[in-house]
Length: 161
Image (tube, rainbow, N blue to C red; front, side, top):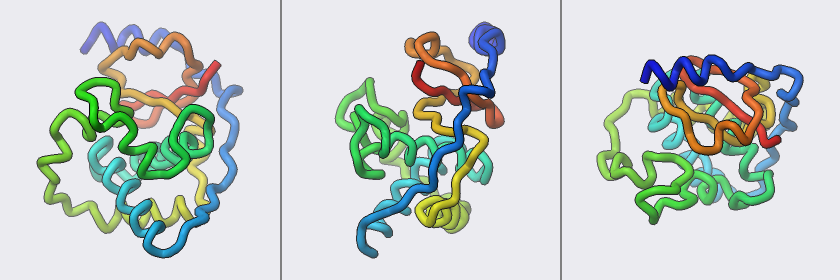
């Protein structure tokens, strides 16, 4: 972990590459919106726990991916992309068995509130248009092919070169 953190610390944050994302405009009906809120809240809680700032960052990445080439067009599609593989899933909780142990977390209503705000157009500008992130204690294979644009707590955020 210490080696990974030291390696990640040597990669500079390029603030100039952090371009503000446009507000997300959800186009589905009420059932689709409720499903999208649950997918966003689930990803936020499993990825960063009950930290509201971290949740906003993760949710912004998911919305950015839903608009980016190479990713599914739906929010739940983005969250669960690759869930059927043991490796290669986009969010580890979907393929490492964590999802089977659905947490009894007191943060569900707060995470859903953050998700609803994002679907209503709130932009978390701190991560810009980032489509990738990882914890600072790991070095993913793709790190050096991207530009680091932000750090939120222990997570590092990237945009494509």
